[in-house]
Structure formats: structure tokens, C-alpha cells
Image (cartoon, rainbow, N blue to C red; front, side, top):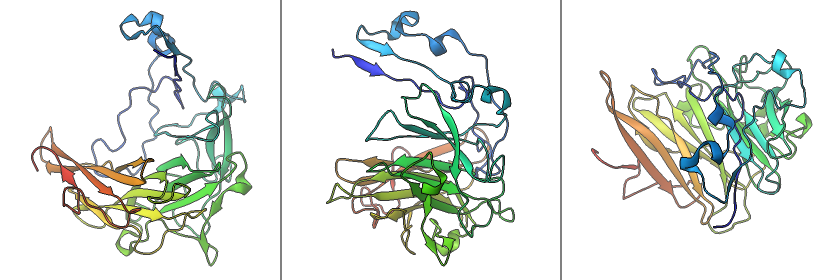
Length: 333
């Protein structure tokens, strides 16, 4: 067996390994959970194969488990950073895999600095820097206390994409904005696509305005052309019941641009539990998969859940799986 170089990177709080999701008892993810969850570190958190012989393989090396707050270029940050640091997202630069970005609830626009923070590492996650580089989308409402949900992914040519949720107090949901940067250490490098000076919405569907939640964004190649910068952002549309599962698409634009009608409904999810809408991409052919849960028996405990899967083979223009435009499930459908 060839050597397997297993890199274990625990971003944002080594102790926070058992977390109850903020939406566990709700069908929406707002307001965000600000409770600091923790437990004391245990030996197996940092031990290699010798301490866990049942998982040991002769050619396996466990390199490290790190905490982004403690293993930081600011040695005093562990004494001053009191943010929740929950609900993390991670992105690794394919051109330079030693460059890693993590986002979390680690600050907001205006607190403690005008720009929102990211965690950035240039050495495989051995040490981290908390960089305040994400400017608020110009003209956006509901930026106070946000970024709320956020997710990041690297594309080609050092381009980092990010989708960020704002929150509209009147609805309890918000809107999504997607931007990009070629230098996550420099705030001036971050770009939003703007129209008349205002950042463009990712949730362009009229019904989804102010009623969107939980973006999940990924980059992928184009179906016929590998050298492309396609961006897909899944989100929940809470303007209807059952909830609309939408996937917005930006085709080869940096920063991303989402046209009206570019975020079709790819399935529905009944109220009673959070849909947990997620994406997966196939870099071999440009296909995109949408996965979400649908509550079929929502009264009492436990609830009955269907796991729904849908697929697009044409850059998100149309969606179908097993002849169903709203996805396919296994089991009791």
C-alpha cells in the first residue's frame, strides 16, 4: 500500500466536536445559534494510529489536529476571541492545496471590524490568521449581525467564491449574495457583481425575495468545456409550503452573475423539519446533484424523513432523476 498522507484539520475549536444543529427543532436556520458548545479535549483527538490500533494501518500517518483560534499568527487571539465560531465551511485551493479558507460565525459586518472575517492558512492548516476581508454587499438590506449562513468553494485560477445570507427581521429569513476574490487576504480583492451600484441577488426568484435560507454553494466545470467557472448555489425558498428547493446557477462569470430565472425549483420539502439542502458536483462531467430531506410524518417524535436526490446534466438549466423533475427518493416514496 502506498503511503496515505492523512491531514486532519479541525477548524474553529477543537473542543466543539459534538454540536446540536441550530435548526434541530425548527424548519428554518434563523436566528443563528450563538451558544458556545464545547467539551474537554480527549487523547484520541490528537493521538495517531498507535493510540487507536483498531484503525491503524502501517502506511497511514495522522499529521495533526489543530484549533484555528489557538494555532494562530496572533498568539493572544485565544484570550480575546469570544465568538461562537460555529457552523463552519471549508475550501481548499486546488492550485495550492496548502492554502485553506474556513468561515464560521466568527464576527459580523461592523463587529468587531467593518469587514466580516475568514480564517486563512498558507501551510496546510498548521497556523491560521483571522482576516477581515469580506465587505458587506453594497445596497443589501439585513446585513446587521451577518454574515449569517455562508459557504465557500475554490474554482479555477485561485478564484475563491462565497455565498452569504443576510437576514430580514420582518420575515426571519433573508437574501443571498455571492461574490469572489483572487486573494482572500486582501479585502480590496473581493468583488460583487453589481447593477446600478447594488450587489446582485443570488435568489433572483421573485417569491424568494426576503424569504430565502441556508445557501450551499459549489463550483464545477462546464459539461462540454472543463475550463469554466460555473457556480451553483442551492437554497431554501420559504415563501411556499411545501418549501421550494432552488438551485441558482452562474455560468463562467467572475464574480458570479445570476440571471432572473436561473434558480429553478428542483424539489419541495414539507414544513416540520429543515430541508438541509446540499449540493454535490461531479468534476468529471460537470453534472450537479441536489440532496434534501422531506418530512412525510411531521407530528410526534421521531419524524419520518425522505431523502430526495435530483440531478442536472446541463449546467443547472433542467433537473430530473428517474423521470422526476422534483427528485427521486428511496424507500417509502
